[in-house]
Image 1 (cartoon, helix red, strand yellow):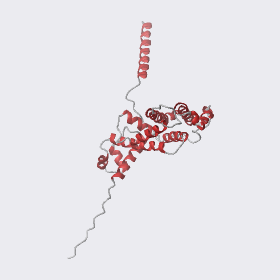
Image 2 (cartoon, one colour; image 1 turned 90 degrees about the vertical axis):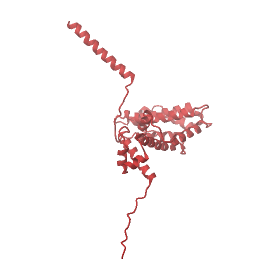
Image 3 (cartoon, rainbow, N blue to C red; image 1 turned 45 degrees about the vertical axis):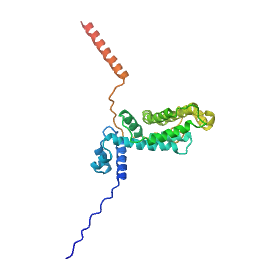
Image 4 (cartoon, one colour; image 1 turned 60 degrees about the vertical axis):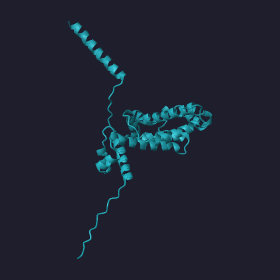
Length: 266
């Protein structure tokens, strides 16, 4: 009696690492488009083409997923500081990278305000190592607090990547403002962190740009501010005290005027 041969369907090869990468990439793209506030693991799984249960096996909560994306971004950014570039080139490259990826600043702020922990500190540790090497160089000033310097050099360019768009008046205003920002950042480094006499080419560039307000766009002819592809809303949960006080003053002024008006009528 002949026995029928039954062929089993080929099993799909499991690739947990590739699945995790796809989830992180989808989450990063979605957060760049609409911010991290409305992100859900289910939506990311659908975007990545991954089963929702599988996605939750990799990231149990939304915060875990955001933390993984932030750790990946930190790793990318930190690798800029291990490349062989002069300080002048490094600053230009860093500013250009942040301007091209404004989602990094948005996610960085969201992560700090939400107190989301990162799954690892590899990127930050690599960045600190680079700052420590700079502080130990004979071409820099003595007694530099390399950890605080690392925070300053991280925060200022990140904030500027968002702030620069406020100068976009349709006449290369953001580009000109970015050129001014980079020049002042280099000035602070040359005369505050480095030994100016050891960096004559950087000092010369700063002095040549004495009046960058009226010069052309770009940073050293290499950087321009891209138009944001998408925008999303940010929801402020706490109003600054000054705003509340100003609004209170306007309310009191209105009440006073109304009271005087009633006295005149009587």
